[in-house]
Image (cartoon, rainbow, N blue to C red; front, side, top):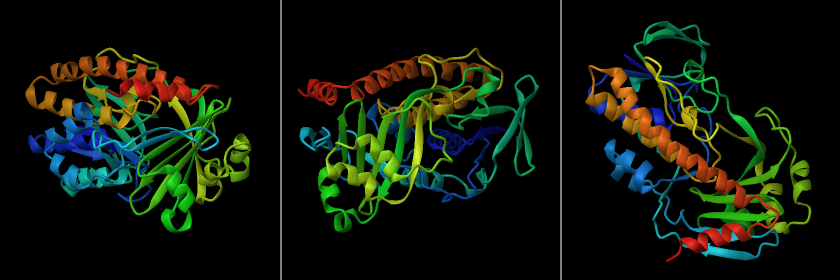
Length: 366
């Protein structure tokens, strides 16, 4: 039996294709229920990765029905709110809400194939290619193949790699604005139909339009110490970093609803890889955590899951060969994407921003 630790995009698309191929598996997810927490903001799915994975999973048409129209539009401003670049998007990289993508993938699987409220406490090798996974709820399972799809702080990763994510010196604070068109029309107009990057002075306020007339916004700035997920920063403390920014930009944080959520940016080293470990592998952030400034995280996770499932199905009697077949191309493409994320962060967070980002986007135009 294949045990998949984690029910994010990579683990779910892996499970979906295994299900189509008639291969036994089970997902163990730490969330207590499917709707235990908000899944995050919008994802733009790329043709060669995220979209390709959904095609392999037989879910592409259902994905298209859930695309957020106009969500791939993009605006770049400076701290005065002056528009420096704009692109309508034209559906080249269609956007979907993370929660909607998860719902789509969950609905494609037998309900009994997912075990909720299973937070991993320990993973032990008990034989060649055999692992025992223990959970906080007292349960334990033994797996003949173990897949770590459990994100940045993977409990499976230490089986194959001693490397841990490093803080990049950049922290985000997430805010949300509800009923934006009615309650926050100036902010809604500033963000536009898709995403907005306001960058200056080595910091930024980033925002995105979401379904149900919501805006997600992020204040981003450099701090020597990463804020913990349990921290609850005040709006006043965050806005001290943006004292001379336009009030409409500041209000994306200052007038937001609910508590602010800190999100420190961590990454694994560019080119992270490991020696083949019997019976275990990693997908998504567990394998190649990187900053979000290449837009590749979820796309790579989806492609990882799809390619791993296809490799297992192609060599059902030789699991080690299947895992090796999956890992080598994954290492290469994730290294390229991680380098792009390093470059993307560097051009967004610089004293002369947004000049570098505007130049980059202009270079992509015909």
